[in-house]
Length: 137
Image 1 (tube, one colour):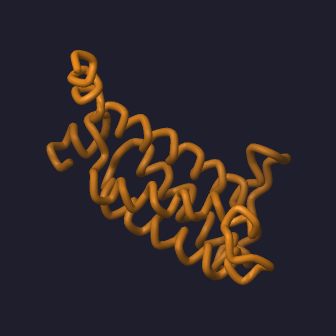
Image 2: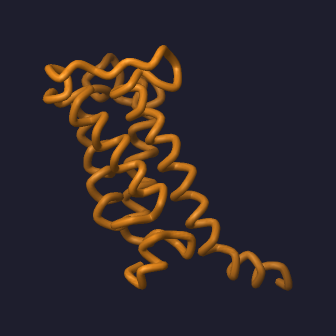
């Protein structure tokens, strides 16, 4: 196949695009938990809520970890931690609710983030990353 070689050459760049898009979307979840953005008026969550599992720790991991993943800094360990957070979120929040199938219990996003981040922890950040610029990808 003549065209398959160009797809193969482009695949590392698509890996970077996957990382950037997933991290941006994940940051939006964290921004909502911490700052009520982008959907509502900007307000900081109270310091009492900041030290809870959700929205506190989850918001920090999603916003801060999402930002680090977005720029591609410490990509592999951050992606692994975020994958674990999403597995935990699925089993603590979604799995016990009404149905075992992720689409029906509202956990399909958590499952998808979990496996995308698990893949990124193995595959690395791709060429467009701070890790790559530092020679650590």
